Image (cartoon, rainbow, N blue to C red; front, side, top):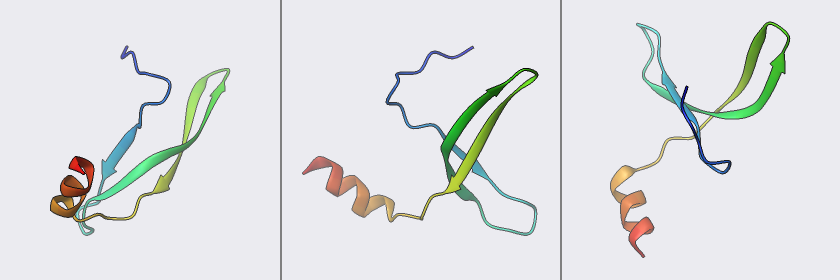
Length: 57
């Protein structure tokens, strides 16, 4: 069990053997009687160095 802030961003990074890694954000959550369902939305790629500079300004 992991405690998260209500406004935390939950991200999954997945790939198959023949595709590059891709990031997904949780779009919706649903609690069903026998399972917890996450609907994922593809996240566009970002340039990490440019993103880090933007976060500092």
